[in-house]
Figure 1: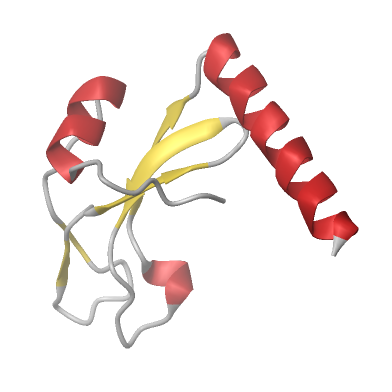
Figure 2: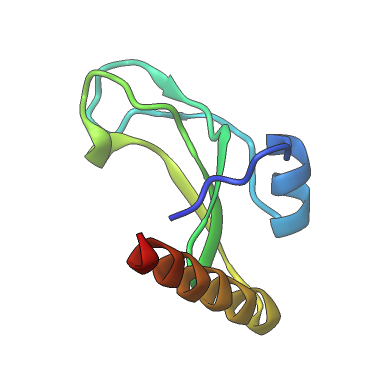
Length: 88
């Protein structure tokens, strides 16, 4: 999973049509989760909330499927990073 640098949550949410509305913790602790941290994986783009005391299984994640071009670019990036790490 990669965390893009220099992109705002608003721009990321607009690009991937992700809601920025908060949700209460699914564990019932009473805290609201705000999707604030952009992330990308090979198949998905999304926003996640910051961790809190209930544990990562209760962090909010909002997902959007990456388009085929983005998935191909991410695979190339993963491969190049894996090759770089193998050289050291």
